[in-house]
Image 1 (tube, rainbow, N blue to C red):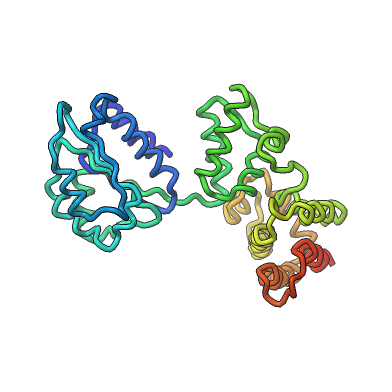
Image 2 (cartoon, rainbow, N blue to C red):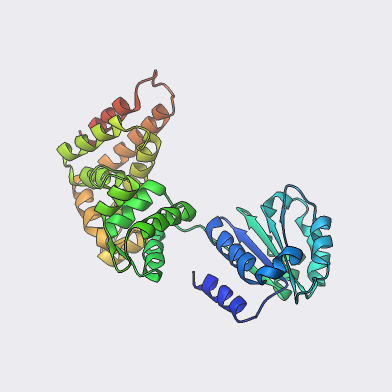
Length: 334
């Protein structure tokens, strides 16, 4: 995020490079940087003649170079943006000739999502010498809550830990999806407000009491009543609570418990670091490891693998997913 801020600040200050190659697994920042360039490098009246958006599936490298070598009209520079540039991955190395001698009056932007240039090859080195190569890396699940907090803080909002975790559990690590939901909340909720589980439930539709985060916590506590209340809710609302997501998150949880059991240093700081969790939740894992010895954790992981296949239709004889989840909970809690 700091790298993104620095890149945008450089553009604001007139330090504009002839090539911006935006690549990597996380499309959110690629889109944000590209959109900033598209909206801000040229004045509105300059864009008609001097800004063009191309799509990788529709053009060749030669087409892009031809556009990039044009001179701007009644403007200091022109902007050429290539979206979905990953569709050109087989021929992208042909860009090297242009990268070695780019048009000084052109700002050429590549949105190269889900792929990366090979740092060992000459194209990477050529672009890096004259322009900007930005790699947008996918955040790990344990990093997303902090990302949510920082994004909201920049807009004068705060968020509780549980509310942030609810968003991660429901939306995963897709920053674009999460940002869309955060923007909806910002329209409804005044600045200087803390976003709570209640606000998430009311405005996004994620239940504050019946979700995978609460299920995981209830299992760790061996709170059978709560577990089956949540599973019954999931059974009645299968579209919002797909079994494949629940099983995947529980598999991750029990894998972490297995790691915990194997630790020599069980200090809160080390546990948080090794498991990749917020220190605030360490006590939940301490309690869960007491309730689930290592041998039982291994048994549960085997059951989760079995029910992952059943949930996908393997050897399940069309059993409703709600019934499969109930059977799985019996196996976990027995």
